[in-house]
Length: 135
Image (cartoon, rainbow, N blue to C red):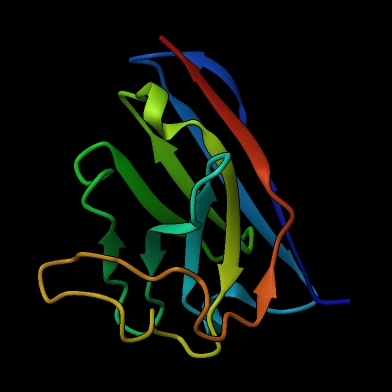
């Protein structure tokens, strides 16, 4: 079975930190670009960050740049999203997904921006983990 398992969500006060994990089973994360998305109630899904395995470049949405850090552990077949200085507007269900290639797709910018919505052929999706940031 090919699966992604996201975990690490929870309730945190504004200014706090959480680390999300995305663990793969049945396939090797190193063969895919791995992205984090989030969806808040009543809002569209948005791309948060992506790790391109092809060149290890990291991409971030403008709203999280400087606060979130994506990283990978090949030995553990896991990708992480370290989230610092959390804000109430970060409250959402967070999902990880595997891209069909080792890159992050076309919805990236040369300076590390990421604006994918997850509607461009992500091949594997994990179940979400809820992040709630209280003010």
